[in-house]
Length: 432
Length: 165
Picture 1 (cartoon, rainbow over the protein chains, first blue to last red):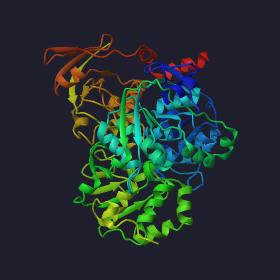
Picture 2: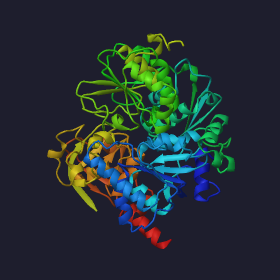
Picture 3: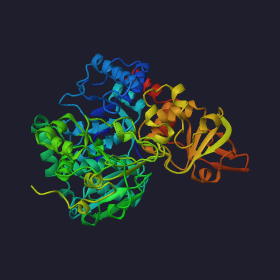
Picture 4: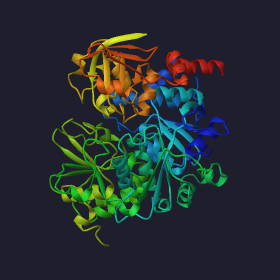
């Protein structure tokens, strides 16, 4: 019986000629990842295990991003615990804030050329599934799994079934990967792909830039998926040739394609032209609506950034739409480039000046407001349009506050209009 | 092993943000986490819960963030078992890893109501609702998961693996 892309990657890492859905396997890991919230408990367990050294100091990535720059004494202690461990273990991929390699974990692991096609990755963060955009297997786990993986370099998996998502055509104007994934979650529900892989294919894939693919895979967890994966095409190869030219030149990666007779639990077909600008109203990512049907919803705040939408392409789109415009009275707009490199590019290209002229707050890279940590927490009764990934009750602050998820163009248009809006409503980007 | 307790009932898609809001994640201490367990969905939970009580919920329990703090908070609150129609996958792994007993049983999860008294036998997977006089058979764990549970969680399982390897 044929295998899916995910099944092939897992079989290879388990040293097996083939695997099938529901097999329980022990697989080798190329990378494991933790952040300052999930790693300190993992370090405690790592020590309880009696482990002395991490399995490979070059293959453990420890990223401070959730509450950084430290929002309070306790978060400073979390970072200090992780920093001490990283130094003690000589972990290569631990960076200080402000350094060029630094940023939000799921922005920097792909952009710094750490994750490559065919790799297997676990991360103690649910959005680790982001990396499937480069054709690897990546999934989120908890702190105990991270601790055991850091010690042994392997972990157990139940081989997932897959949902095949066939994409055709091209997006309409200003429609992005975010609209696509919200559209899919709206179709299948927040448990629509529970325990399964989402495997994307079809002639529409070539029309989605890497920025969009990373966003799509990032939110696969919001429909319960174990992982998501895109085929490795010319767009993906061009991306990895720039993120890590040395590894690319060595050919140190493996491209997998699904067998023709691979079995799928379900198949979804989507014409990208039919995907509207989409928002998810409170309090589930599946509560989707067409953005142009929500323009009566007034807002207090807009957040543009996060591991979902804080990449160079996202921030560039925001700059295009904010050029020559102002954030509406009564609205605060927080723009958070997802990494130090994105921040620097935005500075060099004059985008930060555009945001400043528009009356936006510009933040250093952080997850901050997405999880109600800091840098944009909401009060009772406040409503935020956000390019982040979750709109659960109390996610960004008080349980009486509301989050509406959107892509970058809708978030910008909403900030300018003062209510949920599409770029068409504000007349699109200004010329020149 | 058997547990007996009073039911705290929740709906579908209980996410880890409401189980333990991110604002409390600056400490992973179970004593700290238990004080805020379920705070954003059921602010009276902590004062109502008694040692041994049982949580029952609908579909996709524990969706969202990978924070292991969520099953730790539930376990520390005194809850002896969570029964749901099904669990989000990271929560499922985390619960097993931290030793929070969980059972999947859609029929039981639908029928059982808040305040019912339950008796559950982990060895047989039989859930008995003393209040309603009904009982159900929970889905058995796969053998491999049973091995982890029997080893006392992933920590001991891995410790054994490292020592043997």
